[in-house]
Length: 261
Image (cartoon, rainbow, N blue to C red):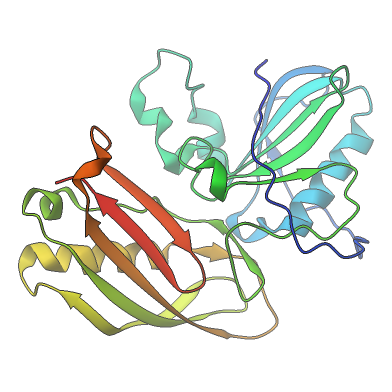
């Protein structure tokens, strides 16, 4: 079994006492009645909240007290949990797509005293260490995610891309959106309010890519509809070398996407 090491991005602690812990419904790919090995379960995207995941892990630990050295991969669909292939395998690359990667991994190793839950908004392989969140058990404080808007963690989203056609034509620019985060955690009423992008077919690809990414966001639920305003900045950067694209989230204000033309 691989041991995972990720940067711990927990901050803003206050006393953490789980209130009315009700673990979300999950589906297992195979039996969880083992003490070692890699395990897989799936839950609904709307159930991906920090509190739910902590509650789920605590509940499963109580049910499976014999767990000794396990890595529990948590997916947002049963299909993804069934077809995802270990990145060290020689399986077709399509199964390594971010769309079918786990968005959370619980890692327990009793001998090494490791007991952590790691969150990956872009999927396991697609999330930079700086954007992942790692929570140590037992949880003694309120975890805060690296990526959040209005104190609502950004749990799942599609990869941020610099359209290849725009890179090929050396097209850059920025576009600003306003929208509403619904109580369910989705971004609605998305509209362009400002921008500096060529009004060519290639330029429009940048706007479409940004809007598609924003529409894919799944944040934690909230009690009210929260307004949001965010700018996607596309910058040409030849210093990236062999790396085609790179991105940086500076929430809640902007996302900087650099591309090597």
